[in-house]
Image 1 (tube, rainbow, N blue to C red):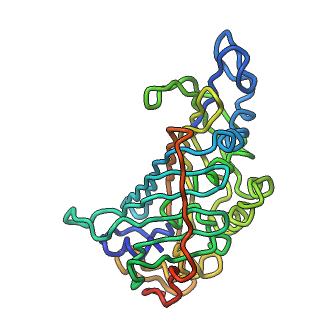
Image 2: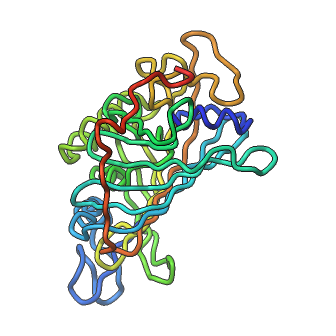
Image 3: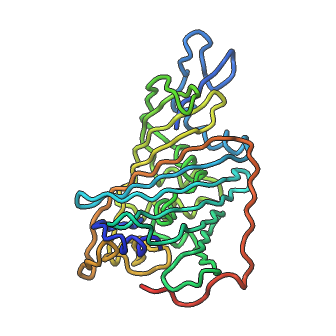
Length: 303
């Protein structure tokens, strides 16, 4: 998917592609009114996804940095997400080329349970058409493929977080938040995820190079996730995890960075750092899904 666009940047990278609980008085999970220390860091982090659903919706900013061979490429996104309906609309911007010019219009992405929709996809897709991809069919469950990690999926990764350590109070956009560090397990998260996200996380557990995912997270005084950063180790290659590699359209991804292909069956790991920032909770979110006639059914260049 976005990987093919990165080829045009000349970047030599093969791309497949928070959080503390503050409390006042007796509010929050195991919080102490005296010193503000959380009673159980793991419990606070495990509840983050549920607190987002309770909050309704928010604005979102994302950043995904991919590194391979000493080269880094960053994809950014901005938009809104409805945690109750599990739907979001984001505008995703690809890196500039070597001359500093934009090579591709921003891609509009609709995040929904079970499917990712993309507009301005490029690669031969008409500008007025959408591309639809079933996230459960992707080798990474769309944790990295779209250049954006679904915000609720990022929070649900924390449901089975382990080795959680509380690191104190920090300031984030003028607000005090609690800062945590730990490790998520993709396989365990898949077992306890919401029904809508089980398939995506199960696919990621099979397709990633490592199921252990380190994270840092920041929670506000209501237990809501304000920022989370995951570090994924992504297996990239022509036949990685069933042959779909990093491309949401199922195309080849081994030569996505600069056109350098790999022999059949070859694969290597790409380090991906995905950051999600949530703010303006309660903001209205409207996500209109495309009609069937607006979805592109033809062949995508590079497949």
